[in-house]
Amino acid sequence: MKSVPAPDLSRVLSGPRREFDPPLAHCPLCGAAQIAAFLEDGRGISLWRCARCRVGFMNPRYSDAALAEYYAGYATEAAMESQALERRRLRKRASVARLASAASRGRFLSVGAWDGLEVRLALEHGFEAEGFDVDPEATRRVSAEVGRPIHCGDFLDDGWLPRDVFPAGRPAAGYGYAALMLDQVLEHPKQPGRYLARAASLLAPGGVLYLGVPNLGSLSNRLKSLRDRAGLSSPRRRGKHFDSWQHLTYFCPASLAYGIREVAGLELSTLAGEPDPQDGRLVARAKSLVPSLESTIYALARKRA
Image (cartoon, rainbow, N blue to C red; front, side, top):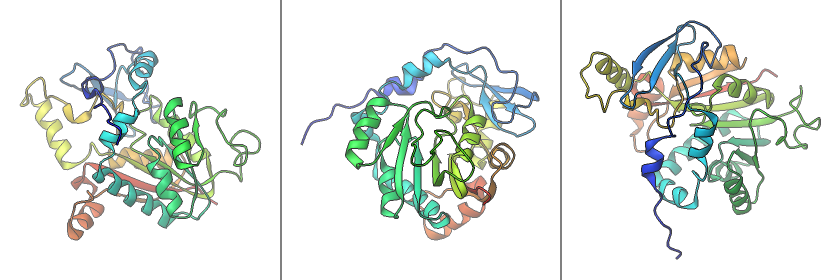
């Protein structure tokens, strides 16, 4: 078996180099001007919150150049093999199953396809599955491995759209995917509102969107934030739960619901805590019913037919 070198996780965990855009004057999710700083984390990153939609976000955010440099080669073969652990596979299997139970069979798009796991799982459920990611090298390799298209480009542009799904080369009424998955993706882009609206535009009438994000509204994270704002944590650990070395936007159930309904214009059918694969049945049920018990939340939303 080929020996694979361990990835340099110290580079990943240190985050992008400290080069930033000008500060935001409006919320990156809903566009409101009612925004204010609420915490500076241990890395010196300023965290803000929107009074209208309740989303949190880094402000200022890393520059495009810093992010491009950071993510270049992020999805290396070594990183994939070290991070695609059994726990992740079990969680992804459950996530794709939830989407499969809500969506009609047809075209499936995994946004942030990375190692192709979501595409493989969707194929098992009978979807005509494909993926999208931003790393050209990884998308070529993963596409060859899974035998399905893995598109590459700017998610907000039309250049990568497959013509057999969108004949006009752009989103249009009556065309699109039956199922679209954005799992642990929406916290990364600089324009989460545009990403969410774009995802909705790529759904066919009646199509279903799956969203999974870290839950900064969980009881555990809320207690950590209260501790940090009270000055009871060490400077080094202050705000560590926001993961500002990789996440630019911070969701809670209220902000995710607002984005789905008001920004994307979709019908929200499910918003729940995402149980850990190792949870027992009763614990998993409790976390599903009470999102504040879980550090990750998911939502299913449908486009009106």
